[in-house]
Image (cartoon, rainbow, N blue to C red; front, side, top):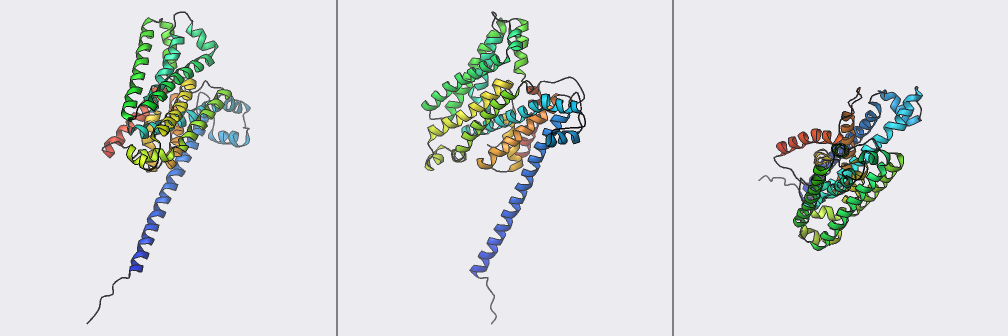
Length: 365
């Protein structure tokens, strides 16, 4: 009577471990390749942003300037360091900040359509700037031309005022949906006041204000870039401190509380982080739209992770890359015309998000 050799428990367990290890190695290999492509794309877009413009500079010269500080044409070095470098760094800092803020808002509210301006911060900044530009007693053209720092201060104060309101509301409300509705209502109220000011203002003042709302990435000096970089470091630092809370929130408030997350405290810190990031960008670059909404979804498509320890660095790189790409297109390489960057962020990002929704049937947070 023949006996069938049965696999031992140890053999089955060994094969299971080997199979699992092989899958993990393959997954890690794919993630490494995707990270490499993402960072390589960011570096190439940064170099292209420095290369393309009304005066095209060869990429070989750009790399030479970046690594040695010199080029075969001294005027190219001056163009890169005196004009284009500040704009490219602004794209990197602003795109990263808005993407990180958008990721936190989408996770906090578990809403795929939430963005950095969902709390009304951009609307508060727009109202403060409108009070300067659309004030009948002031010459808005002189204000914007002679003292752009005044515009930045006004936008910062407008963001700070809305931030204080939302922080107070966040301590009173326990429901994220209610907090979201309050933020939308604050934004609607400030937008209504701006509409009234626009109706009562002169045509010249209206034009100056509308140009500000288009957004600008090329007007910052080195001191303002340093301030924006400090705001990015602070905001992202707070976001990294809340990784446990952000990951727990994906499964709901009750699950987060079961892990020991202080809901009220964590929510205030996340709002503070998003407000610092959004407020700094709005103050120096204007109300840049769509970057914070689109980049988290595009990044998740590339990285395939819901762990914020991985997502936060990924969206920082993705936001910088997207804004660099939009700025390249906005400057119409080979032409002296410059398109509004705000128009291109939506024009480029919206079709991509629509394609993702159609492909995946639904949009996930």
